Length: 329
Image (tube, rainbow, N blue to C red; front, side, top):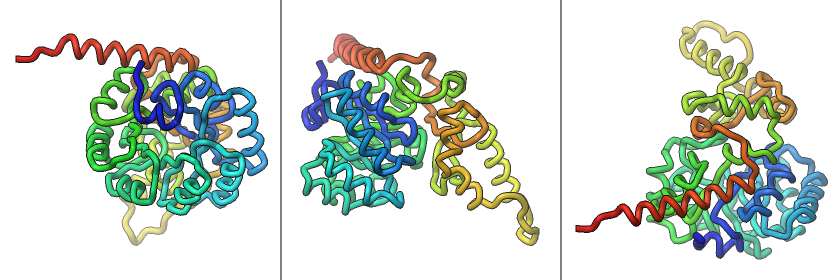
């Protein structure tokens, strides 16, 4: 069995962490991942405070294993969410987008483990300085809000410069990826797109089928839908936004802009009902569909239990195969 600093720190069976993906990381998915031996993370985005508290208690009713809650830095309800998480004594807080030093400090005071997600070495160093217990590095391949440096460069770079455990995100979906991440200095992997395509995920079946049909080239990064660089699966809304951006770039500066402004598009996309209609209700054109380039490698919909067991078996086989094939002169 593969044991790492991460499994010891989090008291989990396997070094696999599920991303806290807003609407997608619901009670069902979070509990299933934790019960299968990984670390499930409940998303807080779009939930009312009372709903978040109830969801936390529901996860606890379904599993006695550790799980976390994801907080979105800059969310108007961030302070209230964090108070609920600390009152409920959640073992792990994950967070990204920004520099929530106050949240790391508050987590430490309450004995909680703080795991920020970063996309640059500078942010990783700052997170360690602020007291993060572990760090998720997210390569540019990842879905959702992402940076510009790929995992294969960012992971060993950060791992060589920080002393806290590093978790590899961006492009991971199986045991070969876990073995590679461990070789590059990680203590575990962080999967979002792959977990969103499990049977326990609340994604609508037609949306899951769209993701399965997508290739590694069927995603794009834009700032238009959320105001920050974010990778989405190509659908009608994303294509329209990209076309408008291209038209705006090519229009002479003296011509007035027509149609929705960038700010209007961002407001539309941030509205929870648009994401809900698209991701959960199956309207493929309603809103943005976050997804990583790894969709090109996913061709089926497993249960969380099947996914985690298969990932661990593949990782052990890959490590064993490399050891047996290596020749020393």
